[in-house]
Image 1 (tube, rainbow, N blue to C red):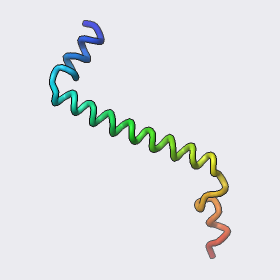
Image 2: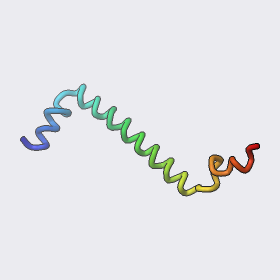
Image 3: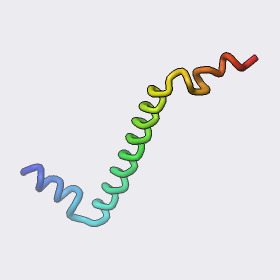
Image 4: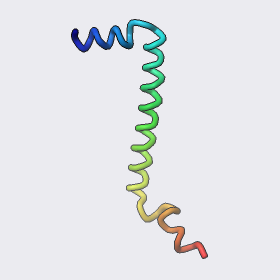
Length: 59
């Protein structure tokens, strides 16, 4: 059994499982992009964010 026939029988054969795979994949992709962009933003702005300088202004 090839990988193509496995994916066809498991996911693409029925519309309901195909849509479930699309929704699950888009949720995972959205979360991965969100975490990656937050990590890049925080590393680029290290020392300038409120969480990095709030100890200077709190009493």
